[in-house]
Structure formats: C-alpha cells, structure tokens
Length: 167
Ligand code: NI
Image 1 (cartoon, protein in one colour):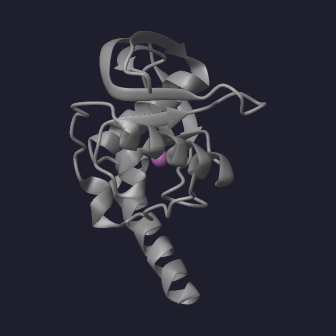
Image 2: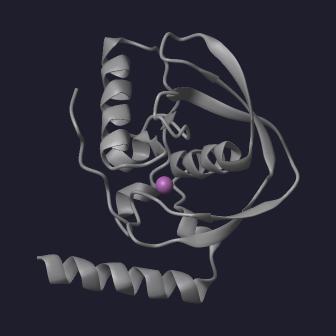
C-alpha cells in the first residue's frame, strides 16, 4: 500500500471528469487500497480517485468513528434523492476551508464494490453528504463551487497565498 499525494484546489486537474471503470483488475484493487490508506492517513472520511489525479469513477468512504467501515463505490450512479440538508463540509483538496453546502438529505446510489459485485446504498445524514461530495469530485466539481462567486474568489486567493508562503 502507499500514501498518494492529494491534488490541492485550485489545481485544474480537479476539474477533469472521471471515466467509467470498464473492468476491475488487480490494479484497480491496488488503487482502492492506496486510496483508503491515503484517506485514513490524511485523515479524511471520503476520497475520490480524481483527488489523487486518477480519473476513474472510484470513491472510498468511511464515516465510522472507529474507521472500520470502509465503503468502496466503483462506477456509482445516483438512483434517487430526496429532502434537503445544509451541512458544513470540508475537503482534503481544500485544506482548512469549511462551509455549508445544500445537498439532498437522502440518496440512493448503485455501485460496484472492489470485487465487482453490484450493490445499492441507501444513505442519509453525514454519509449522504459524503456520497454527494465525492460524486461531485468525479464530475470535476469541488465543494467550494457550490458557494457564492465572492466566497470562491476569497478561498482561491487564500489558498494561493498559503501556497506561496510554503514555497
Ligand atoms: Ni472533497
């Protein structure tokens, strides 16, 4: 396993649209385990392959307190959504920035697990927020892009300034 570097907003590569995984191979499973290790090490509760510059429809999530409930979603498709919720979000690609984003309260998603078996996930609360956040990444969308234009400009300037200071 390996910890992979995470792309940092506003990196343009975060806006690439991920492609469907055509076949789940040993390389896919290696990628999934590296993504999980990277997410746990960060630490984070979710990660899309986009964030490590791999543009395939793969997500890992673990919202459990004990970090022992890893969810792998390959080729996730949204089947249903309902309700509204507004929850504070953060992102491993946008460190130190947290803001409220409007999402559906409940979602139903179908996906393949790391063995290639199809399953359906019914999620609500934090898990539903996380699933929607990660599925956005696969479409090339970062959570801050749900915020006002003014907030996005401020966030970009703040992160660019921080990047300059660490160089
Ligand atoms: Ni994120």
